[in-house]
Image (tube, rainbow, N blue to C red):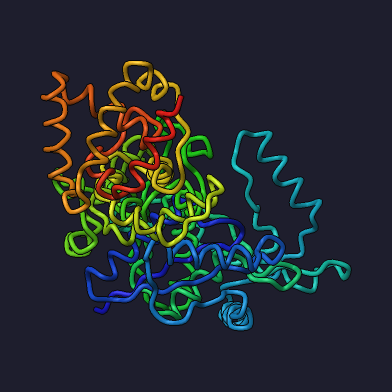
Length: 467
C-alpha cells in the first residue's frame, strides 16, 4: 500500500506551532514510507477564512522547509461534491431532514445542561415523515448514527479506542443554508484524495468516531488513524501565547532557524532512543508512529533556544550573513554595505560561537558594521591605565607591516608586546577589545583585528587616544 497523508489546516489565522508539528509528522511519515503528503486548505468557514491566512500557511511551511506533493486542494471548491454525497446518503435512508427550529435546539441544550449532560440532539426528526414538517422552517440534513452497541477503532498512537454508540447523536451533514459541515467534508475529501493515514491532534479523537461511521455508510475504506497528544506549556497547562502558541513566522522573527525548530518539534512527543540532535535525513530514516508518545509534550523555550544555538554554530557562514543582515537593518536601523557584508562573512566563524538566535547574532555583529559606542564595561576598561596600554599597542601596531597582519601573527605580536612591557595578555587584549567592539566580551580580538584590517583597526584606536 502506497502511503498518502494530508495536512489540512483551516485558514483562519497564522500557522500555529502545534499545526506545524502536525505537518512535520505527516511529512516525515510520508517521506519515510516513500509516499505523498497532500495539502488541503479547509476553508469552508467563509466568515473566518482569509486569503492572508492561506498565504501565511504556505509561507510558514515553506520557511520550515516542509514541502507538499501535488496542487493544494481547497475544500470550499468541492462543496458540490459534498452535497452529492449527502443526497446519496438520503437515498440510502442513512440521512434525514431535520426541521428543528433554533429555539428547539437551544431548549434541548438547556435541558441537557440542567441535567449535567453534554448537549446533544434528541433525534426527534429521525423517523418522522416530512409531511409533518412546518412550512416556514428550512431543514438541515442529519446523519443516522448507530444507536446501539460500541464502536472500536485502533489508533496508531492511542491504541484501541472504544465509544458507546449511544453517545453519538445524529450530527448535521448539511446546514439549513446548504453548506456542508466539517465532519462530512473531511470524510469525502479524505476518500477522494486516497488518504491512507490520518495523522492529527488528539482534539479530533471524538470526530474520528463520527467520521468512521460516514465512511462505513458510504462503503468506503476507512483510513488508519493516529491522534497525537497536544502540546502544553512548561507548567503543564494548555499551550497559550505566553508559552509559545505563536505562528511559525513569529519564531522566524525571534531568530530561530527552520532546521532547529523542525528538530525541536520532532522531539515534542516523538523519540528515537536518547538522540536529541537529529538531522532531517535521520528524521526521515527513523520516523514512524510507534515512537509517538501518548502524553502531552511540554514546550520549553530554553531547550529550543539552546538547540538553535547548536544549529547556528553548524550553519554555513555565507548563509548566516544573508540571514543576519535583515535583522541588523530592521532591528538596529543600520544599512549594511558590501564592506560590512565582507566583514560579517570573514568574522562569522567567531561571531556565531556566542549566539543562540539570529537576534543575538545581529546584536553581536554590530561592531563590524559601524563604529561602536563604548558601553559601561568598555569605559571602565579604557580608564587612564587602559588608555596608556592602548597607546603602547597603537605604537607597536603602527610599525607592524601589512603583510604580517594575520590572525596568528597578530596574536604572537600582542603576546610579545605584553611580555616586553611586563603585562599579562588579558591586560593588553582587553583595551584593544573595548576599543574595537565597544564591549568587554567578543570573539577573538586577533580575529577581529584581522577581519577589520590594519587601517580600520587603527582608525578605531587613535580617536580614543586624543587628549
